[in-house]
Image 1 (tube, rainbow, N blue to C red):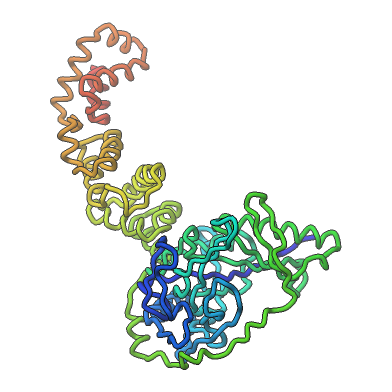
Image 2: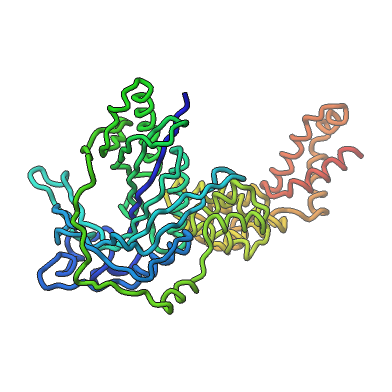
Length: 479
């Protein structure tokens, strides 16, 4: 019997604003604990929140990117709960009037198949502080620097059917957030956090199975693995006739054991006693503000991928790698502004430059090989001034030193010998010095051709143009 998994996601992403959602405290990662705080984000009596306009702009941008409807009349609400990470004992969020709703995001299942994943709502809220249970043997420590940082919560429809689709959606969403410039979405920094809801049912049944929530996943790979495990666990229970053993509960992903574990049961939704935030009256987003946001130009990852495939005849694989990060895509387009062969540029970025970066764990903005320097290297190869082999050595040298490629070529004497008459004289010298080998070649020992090529390269210190050397050598040997 065939089964089907039903998957929905709840994603929180921190916004790349300069200040917090409702106060002027800076948003900075890695600062000394409890330094970016003030009476507003700490919930001191008499302090009043003021809405960060940039948070609204970024929410509207994501709404546009996900084809969402917009609530022009919007409001904030208080979500009440008591936990040390929230100093006010309530969170300012949005309940019944999310700023964006009924949207979708397209994912590529493969080169020719796409799927729209519905987005139920996108709403604005503030982040909590961070609790540390492992920094001190006797005490739990709290850092409130993160309290009040603006968040968008993105809730999907239960439209995903496989762990792979969930992985693809998260990858596409992360790229979209970065392309829009509204969030760095680094899971390792806590800038993007994912909760998963999953159930399993028989394919011929209309009713969904019991929903289980998964938490504590710190990478997209972990989300995929946690889903694979949980789906397998639920299928096994259904097959055994024990579907009643699947409880509505929250389970924690234990990465070191590759399994989920019960964290808490969830018989019914918690009563957060939502009510309208009294210090921020409901307000209308003006048409002028919406028009201003609508005038911001952007290109989404899938759109850019299709354009690069069309403009530069890139393969699906190459275009996917190039557009996987906005900074790599921009770098590629800067390279082709100085060297028009996009396929060659993509090949060098993917197979040479990214490999060097991976070895050093660097991103494209941290390296010394600027786009114009890579374009210069490719131009030198294209003009036969250096060989492709020397080009790879040159790239490593530029990567290490940041020096101008042409200067390095001159300093190292790496210029390729491409002058036909000069090459012919060198090849004649080699043949004169190896008369016996020439006779053996003419008597049928074809493998000696490689020997002659090696001797020419030795005389030119590896700088002879291989193609021209090959042509001239064959002509002289066959005379």
